[in-house]
Length: 238
Image (tube, rainbow, N blue to C red):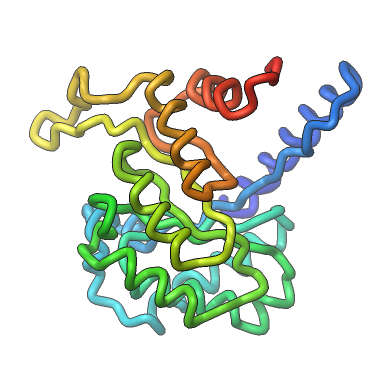
């Protein structure tokens, strides 16, 4: 399934890109295919992806991710999206993997994006400051960006500002809509999500804070991405 996900994404990208080039000459950049390397907790489906309370060592987390990264690498994605990481132990495991000779030999860059509970803390409760110190202590030529995803659009700006003040690398951000989840009734809470205009207005702040890769995560739609493009690139026609 991991291999197929990359293969299908590449095929779809190539088809769209070929069609786009036939229809119009443009300086638009060729879209990239990012292979998702989700957090360990997502494989458990027990809610630990929101806390990072895994009771695993860094070495154990490295072994979990190493196998998946090497499988995905065989299908040659353009970049690894190590995403929705809730705790520093998992960030550390991923940073060390980017220094692993087998992973480095693939030559595929990666970003690492964390999930946050507020503008100063990861979902684990650990600080953004500690995150930046950890990233700075384990450099890798494969680490292309760090940032935030699957978090409230109202919180990510502060986190990005803290990151940019301590790290000299591009930032990535793709927030969710901020919509609340009713765990008892297992449904989304009406009226709690931001609309696309608000989302794209906030994205201007993210760009000012240093974000160079900007998108949308859970509960965002193609219309959200279109609003982002029009807001961030005002003269874009699509």
